[in-house]
Structures are given as C-alpha cells and as structure tokens.
Image (tube, rainbow, N blue to C red; front, side):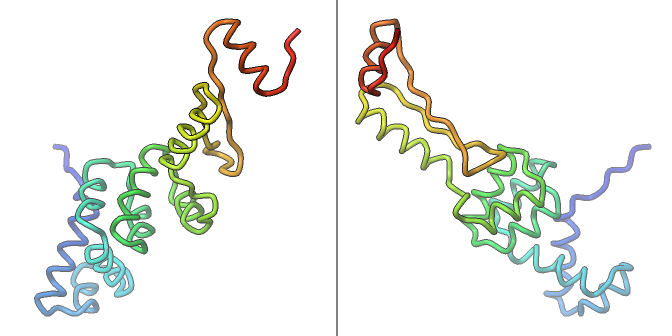
Length: 163
C-alpha cells in the first residue's frame, strides 16, 4: 500500500486553523511532536504566502518548503514573480536567496525583452539581449542577419570591415 505524504502547505494550514481556534503554538508543538519555533514558522508560511504562490507550490514539487520560507518574506506580487523564476530556471533555495539579496542582479526578463526591442528599432536589425543565468552580470547581445548583403550592412553599421 502506497501512502502519500501530505503537502507541506496542508500542515501549515492545519496549524494555522488550530492557532486561529485558540490553540497555542506550544500546545500544538507538544501534540504534534514539533518545536514551538517550527510551529510558529509553519503558521507564518500559511499567513504570509499569497494565494497564487500557494497554488504554484501545490502544482509544482520543485517549490519546496525552503523556497516557500524565502518567498514568504516578499510581498505577494514579488512572491509569484520569484516563484515563477525558480520554476523557469531551476533555482535552489540558496540561489533564490541570493537573487533576492542582490537586487542589482535581479533584472526581470521583461527588461531584456524591452531592451532588445528598443535596440532593434534603433539599429534597424533584430537584436536579442539576454542575461547569463549562472553569472547575472554577464550576457549576450545577438544581432541577426539574413543573407550576405544583410551581414555586410550589419558590419557597416558596426564599423567593421569584412574581408
């Protein structure tokens, strides 16, 4: 017989209901065999995580309780954005903490999309700007061309002579 482990949010919400009905964290801890500190942190998760972030945590096992603890420190909008970025890039809990701690390196993908569009309009050729996920201060600028005439045109705009 296969027994499924309840989702960590089920435990969080169960403890929150118990606290809201008058139980103390200490009594819940004694009853369930946890420390009072763990019960307080677990109740905090249930209170602080947005509905959207909870839904993402339930849908995707990649979002662990550790990720949820970090996300709970953010406002609702940022929780969802960072949760989606964890899923898109496979960040560990430590990587998520680093991205939140160093906001200068937390440039959203939409920024690079807008930058790519703006540069393409100015340069007159399709340009894509991307950030290197493993080294956020690095990236790539890709200029597309179609055919040798277009390539020569790009080189001319860059001031490069092709031989």
